[in-house]
Image (tube, rainbow, N blue to C red; front, side, top):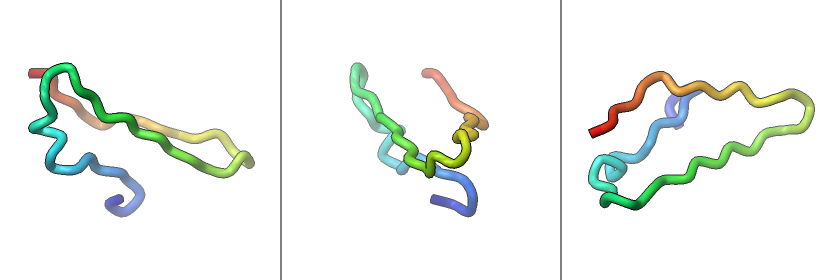
Length: 43
């Protein structure tokens, strides 16, 4: 976690082909989660 953001770990760049990272965000039921992706790169 970095401030109000979550940052993927550095090893994500060496994730083998066919593998994936699952991100699960758990929050209170009082309000819906607001999730956005600021950037991504496909190689």
